[in-house]
Amino acid sequence: MEQIKKRVADSRAELVQVIGQQDLNGYGRLFGGRLMSWMDIVAAVSARRHSGKNVTTARVEGLEFALPAYTNDTLVLIAHVAQVGKTSMMVRVEAFVEQLNGERRLTNCAWFLMVALDESEKPTPVPALLIETEEEKREWAQAEAVRQGFGRSK
Image (cartoon, rainbow, N blue to C red; front, side, top):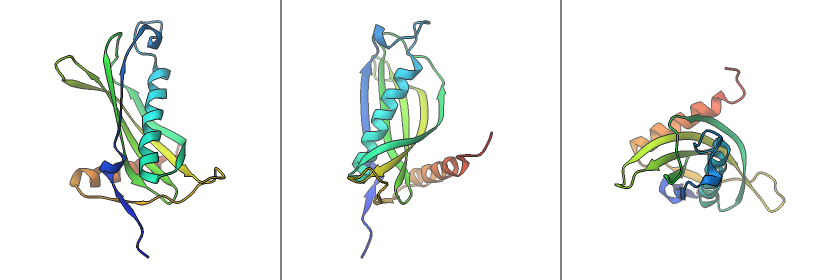
């Protein structure tokens, strides 16, 4: 029997937030923990769309705070599954500050390792990923490199 495959686009998820006072740290910038929470949510939605299962976050890798975000900024978070294993998915999440003219600046990017769970909350197999473009091939390779680096000291 042929394994079910899903397209990368099928897992795309987007979350939009307008940053308020309650989202700021003591320096008046977006609190990193708040951003991480939002990124985890959009990663989970993406993984759920791919797997059709509940999921849990197993690891986050490469989260870097490249640019700050401030009060009243529009933050756009975009996620998609970039690589799969037997029960896990590597989800790429990018965060952008969107200007009023629609221009976006990348502020953060991270990889989330998400694991699909069955009704007993045990890892369960996920569909294969259909890779259709050169960009998707590059991202698969990037995700695989990140996955291979898990557990290695830096």
